Image (cartoon, rainbow, N blue to C red; front, top):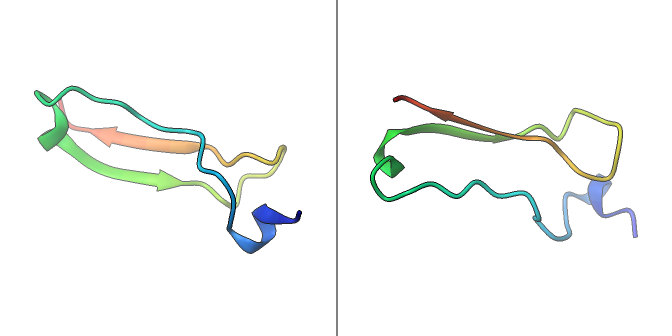
Length: 48
């Protein structure tokens, strides 16, 4: 109960990348400030 406000709970959004591009990951971000559901959008920045 109230897991988002306490920043607890299950993390169900993931990015899966191949080993070939794993070293190209620049940043992974959880956008906890975006509201609209009980899930937070996630963002992955990759240099290709």
